[in-house]
Length: 468
Ligand code: AMP
Ligand code: ZN
Image (cartoon, rainbow, N blue to C red; front, side, top):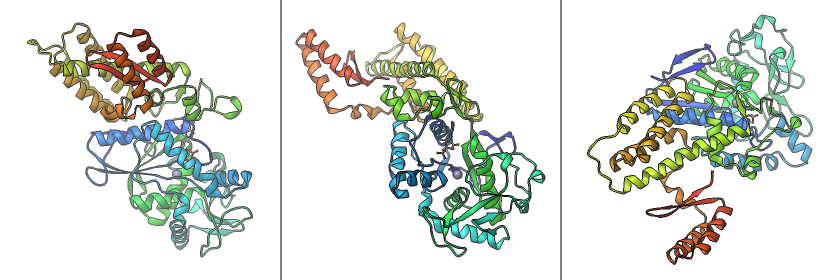
C-alpha cells in the first residue's frame, strides 16, 4: 500500500488510482523565460522520484508536464529583448530538456506546450461561459470566484472574506489578493494574440494547465503536483476552472514540494545566491552529486542547499559507486564460500525497509538509510574477503533495483559515454604500464584526470570513471 500526503485533505491517504495499476499524473512544468534554477529542479526531482517510485511498485505511469511558453513573464522577456515570443522561449525550452537529462530525470510521456493548445483553452472558456462562470470585462474574460463555492478549499481560506467582483489581471498574486481572475486577456499592444469567439487575445496562465491536463489525462485524474508556490492561486484556479466546466472532481491527490533555499536564505538574484544548474556544472560540481542532494531531503521539508551539503552528497554517491565496482570484481572472480555471510539476510531486510519507506509518502531518509546499511555491511565483508561471487551478484542486483528509483549510479552501459579522447589516453596508459614505463603512465593519468575522469587499476585491467 502506498500513501501520500494530500494537500487537499491535509492528511496522509492511501493511494488508490482510478484504474488499477495505472496512474495519470500532471506536473506544472517550467515557465521558459530563463534557465532552470536549482529550486525548479528540486521540484522536478521530487516529481521524478514520485514517477520512479510508482513504477517501482508496478504502476504504469502517464506523466504530463506542460511547458509554459506564454504568460506574463515570457511576454515581458521577449518584449525586453525585442524578439518574438517563440524566439525567446525556444532556447530556454531546449535548455530545460538538456538540464533534466543531465540530472538523469526520466522524461515524461508528454510535454505539451501552451502555445500549441490555444484552441483547447478557447473551448474550455466557452464551456465555462455556458456554465455561467465567466464575465466580460474591459481587459478580459474573468472567472467569478464567488460563483464557485468550493473556491479556497485547496489553499484553505474563507471565500466569504473576498470582495465580490474585485478583479486581478496578473497571472501571479498572493492569497491576500484573492479575486476574480483572468481566463482570457484581451488583445493589447506588444502581446501575441489569437482569435476567439469572445474576442482576440491570449490565455491567462491558469487556464493553460486546466486545458492541457484534461486533454491528456481526462476530466478526472489521479495526481497533480507542483511546488508549494503553485497552491495559490494557480492550483486553486485550476480547480475552479476544471470543476466549473466539467462538474466532476478534477484531481484525487494533490502533492506539493516545499521550496529550496540557499544557505538558509531565500534564493534571489539580488542576494547573489541564485543558482542555475549550468553555473554549478561550470564550477565543476558533478550532476549526480546535485541529483543526490536534491533528492535526499523529504519533499515536504524545506531543502537547504549548501556547498557543504553538496560535498556530502558527492561522498555518498562515490561510496555507492566504489562499492559497486568492487562488488563487480568479486562477482566476476568466481569466489566460492562454504559459509553464507551476513549479506543475504541484510539485503532482504533492507529491501523491505527501502520499499516501506518509499511507500510511506516517499520517505527518502529511511530509504537511503536502508541503502547505506547494505553499503556498510558489504564493505565489511569485502574488507574481510568473506564475500562469495553469488553474494556479490545479489548485492549488485539490490543496487540495480534501488537505483531504478534513485538514479544516481548510472547504468551498466555508462562506460560507452566516455569520450574518445579519454579512451585513447587510457589505452596508451595501459600500454605504458605493460611496458613498465610508469612515468609515462602517470603523465597519461594526469591528462585523463584533467578531462574529468578517474582511472582505477583492477585485477581485470584499468577502469574509467567520471569524477564525482
Ligand atoms: P516556474 O518555472 O516558475 O513556473 O516553476 C516551475 C516549478 O518549479 C513549479 O512547480 C514551481 O512551484 C517550482 N519552484 C519554483 N521555485 C522553487 C523553489 N525555490 N523551490 C522549489 N520549487 C520551486
Ligand atoms: Zn500549472
